[in-house]
Image (tube, rainbow, N blue to C red; front, top):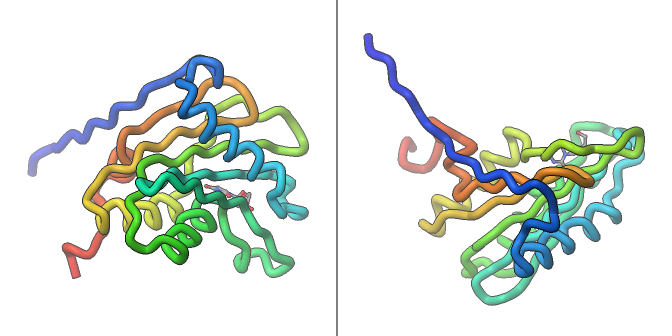
Length: 160
Ligand code: THU
């Protein structure tokens, strides 16, 4: 038996203001998408914005359902929308912002495990890392240079 160590590196920005103007634009688009989330049950709103290599920005937000498991997260709504509309495009970046209606969300909110798996599918398919930025409503922003960084020991098509 031996131990393996898997390292993940993240970059932390003190606030939205520290982002470059290009990333601010993408994050602002995610924030606008977040405000339009349909989340009457959790009162937790998430917005996502994807920048594609064709210059298009594709958005998504969480869509909830009275039958709770039928709802979908913002990140998957966005990435499936991008996959449906621009199947040949490469996804360069993803910005995510989350906010609760009950209290101020000041910590960066990462994508859930199911969304990580969904994003991983596209990163593997396009053979190019997807840069991911995530934040709450305000406060620090975290950057991951690749989805792989958020999902060690990935399950992908290479095992099938
Ligand atoms: N949610 C997202 O949109 N993305 C995530 O990565 C985590 C959770 C949504 C799902 C649900 O509508 C609400 O946030 C509370 O879990």
